[in-house]
Amino acid sequence: MLGLGVVHLDVAVVALTELMDGVALFEPDWADIDKDLTSYVEDWKTATGS
Image (cartoon, rainbow, N blue to C red; front, top):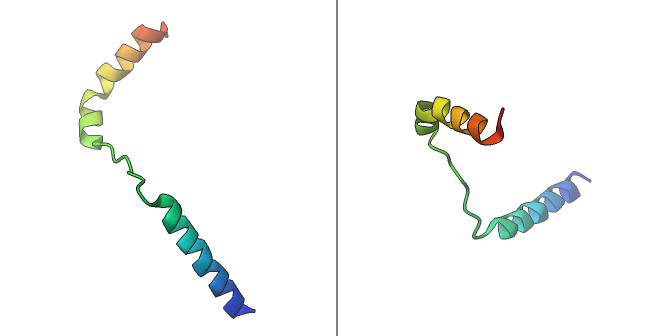
């Protein structure tokens, strides 16, 4: 039974890898976001009337 679980996992990994082919992951620049966060929040509040 253990062998079947490993084969099933391998098939799932292959399928997921194929699904993710060509997908670009967004990686934010957290230092830049942190630097300007206060102004982003203020702009959001102004825009939404919050």
